[in-house]
Length: 166
Image (cartoon, rainbow, N blue to C red; front, side):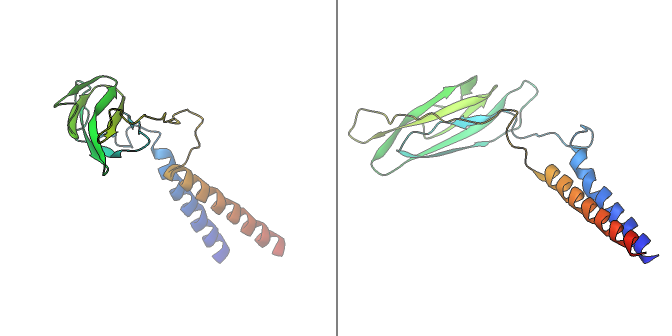
C-alpha cells in the first residue's frame, strides 16, 4: 500500500511540475508583455563612456513606445551625440546625454564620444546579436520539463526495483 501511495504521489508531482512548461503555449494562460515590445540594440564604441536605456512606456495602440537613453562620458572624453537606425522621433536634441525618443520599430543606437581636444569621434565596432531561431533554448519551461523527465526516470527505476523484489 505504501509503495502504491508513493508511486501515485510521484506521478502527481511530475504532472503538476510539467503544467507551467506548457502553459506559455496558450495565449489565454500567459500574460502578454506590456513594457518592451521593440528590440533596442546599443552599438558600443571601443571607448569613451558608458550608456544604457530603459523603456518608459508600454507600446500604445498606435505601435509607439517611449524609450529613455543615457550616456556618460569617461574622463578625458566628451559625448558628441546619438545616432539611431530605425523609426523614431526624438523628444529632445540628439546631442543631449539624456534623451527620450518615441520608437515605432526595432532601433539600433550608437552613443558617440570623442577625446577632448581631438576632432575624431570614437569608431564603433560591430555588435552581432544572435536572434536566430536556432539559438539555444533555455528558461523556466525547459527546467520544468527536465525536472519532470528526471522524476519520471526515477519513478520507473523505483517501480522496476519493486517489481523484481517480489
